Image (cartoon, rainbow, N blue to C red; front, side, top):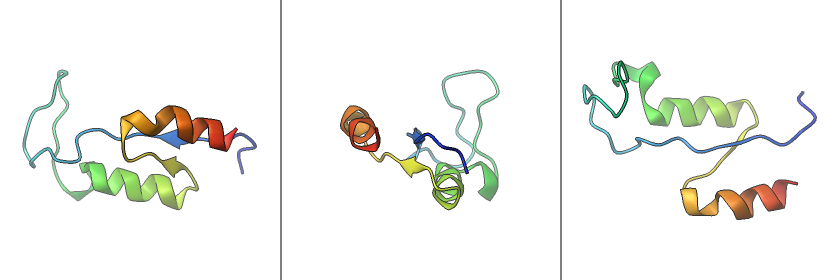
Length: 64
C-alpha cells in the first residue's frame, strides 16, 4: 500500500480503435490498450480516477 493519495486522468476515452493520437507511436490496439481498460486497472489498484480534467484540483484537494 502506498501511503500517499494517487489520482489519475486518462485522456482518449472517445478515441476509436486504430486511431493514432498526438505523439509518435501512440495507437490504441486491442483491449489492453484502451482508455477504459486503463481506468479499470487504475481503480482496481485503488487509484482515484478523475473523469473530467476540470475536477483535478478539487479532487486532489479532497484527497489531501
